[in-house]
Length: 326
Ligand SMILES: [Zn+2]
Image (tube, rainbow, N blue to C red; front, side, top):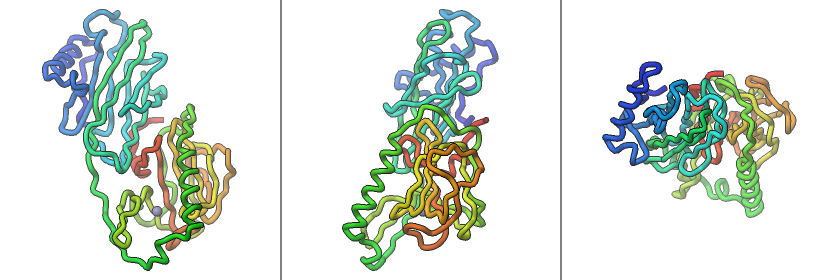
């Protein structure tokens, strides 16, 4: 829960809730589709029908919170809907794209991925469902995406090191397309549970997520992963439960494993020296999937770890801080 969370109504107090909603209306915030309680953010609660006594008193107030309170490029936010237990057909979207909910606490939750190049500003979300009393409920708000300062690296390199041969160009292009096709596949079942774990025991801090590289004056695509320095042969473990969705040898990524954690969340492990798992296998959090290497385009042994949530390139290290209980 972020600091921007709405002041909680005392348990069972429909009046307090009504007051906070009326306040939101008075400021016109709800009509704009968002309710801000803090400089950056959101925590809208809307019980449009329930609070005015149309619905029986047994129904809990529905509350929607989005955590963390400040969302930056590359972040993952968690949207939690409480007081909606057992509601079938929880439905929602962010920026017009569908959200995938899973049962959580006495309601539902879904992850929102903010691409590392997402435009800063307001991103609207909405949810809707029919409660157990058969009443349609809805809520809407907006997330404010803040720009994040990424390091910029300007490099001058011999053209032979930078420009690919037509053959390699085609290969890299086809491999990128293969990854995009993989990320298009959204398995409905959530396989991951609880916290995510670091994929490698590394001596230093991971670095490089989002860094913009300008090589010989030409901007290249930003670095979409975190690099962990570790000696060749260091075990690499699954950050969370998932299915081995891809096991390939790519021009840039080298020997690569992609884990499908379900509902559109993938983590990728690149430049591996060896791989200990087979495609299709279900692996548990912390189980060894391979070893650090320098296959593909790598200057030395390290693990390139990246994560993708429904086409949003997210900072994998943000997953380690995801406020989700088991
Ligand atoms: Zn890297």
